[in-house]
Length: 182
Image 1 (cartoon, rainbow, N blue to C red):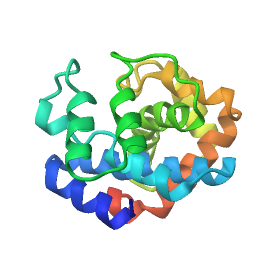
Image 2 (cartoon, helix red, strand yellow):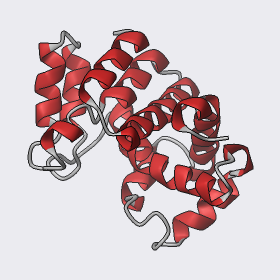
Image 3 (cartoon, rainbow, N blue to C red):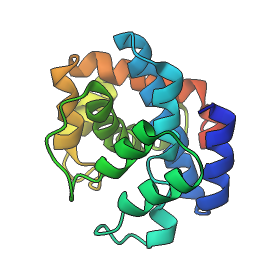
Image 4 (cartoon, rainbow, N blue to C red):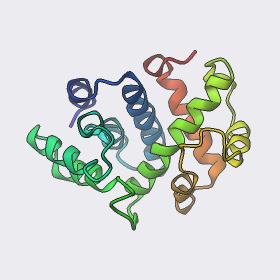
């Protein structure tokens, strides 16, 4: 599946501006992590774009989140492999992430909010966010409290946290226009 097709699906099913930003941010992080690991960056980016395709539809019902996304994606001709990853990404229904793409999605999904919050503290300037900034804010449990730090830590099976933060910041910098950052 091509990025443009994924964006069209995203626009069709995701209406909340904050969820659109989250999807773009997660996709950008996924792409950079895939590049670093020598994986299929375009596919990982598409997975990041589509991972919450059903969130507005299920209204935050975490018992249905991922399952509805899986159904929507298959109905729209998205490859089974991508749909399966979207189905499994809901950590409240699934565990045991062993594949690099699933680990990266868990980390990117949570880290996107943490790093966006770091940028907002700096007036929306993603260029002013450093791995050191993110590391410091990661330790503050009350900062971006909704970001699941344990899910971010899963990335340590693939790379060190500093590298992950650097890649995530680079990815977000590249899509700053799509996510409303300076």
